[in-house]
Length: 116
Length: 111
Picture 1 (cartoon, chains in turn orange, purple):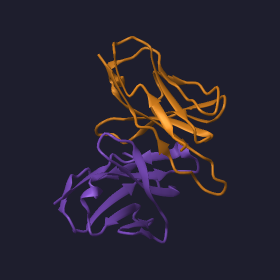
Picture 2 (spheres, helix red, strand yellow):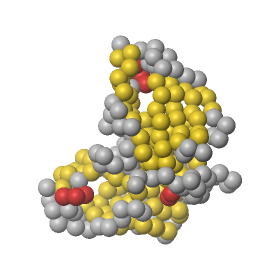
Picture 3 (cartoon, one colour):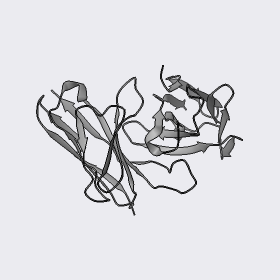
């Protein structure tokens, strides 16, 4: 069955360290997204990609970067982790459906990051 | 002002009860509307899309009121398995990058 997986599922790191969260999907979806989820906020978009070599900033992109070298993967990098980046991170993918505003988002299980 | 606002709850209802959630959105140009369900410490999953005419899926009914800019979700005959957080999602303009999520409404169904 097609799926979307994230790793690591849990990570504790120190302020200033570089952290990379992996996201891999086997749906063959063109669209991939990274969100963060914090108490009191809805899911907020960090970065997104509509295809290989395409990346775009979302609502809360400062301090994060992504790259899309193939269809399956969209790793999220925190260049210098800050305590404000402690959060649960969700990767998602969707297909582009002609004539429809957006396809269903399929989410990974989430990565819980703690920055000390 | 947030793009999407929901009552966070919690809503605690007995099994078999009918419960309704509302969600308001601020941008009148919003085009698409959805309800996602999120179980504790799990990822969100699409529950249903919301269409202008309203739509029903089993015990779940979703309605859209464009004039008042709100959408609703009605759950009839609540089951224990309905306990979850329900996320209201609005697409401002075409494109999945324009999805805005509410903070969610937590529902607990009590035996």
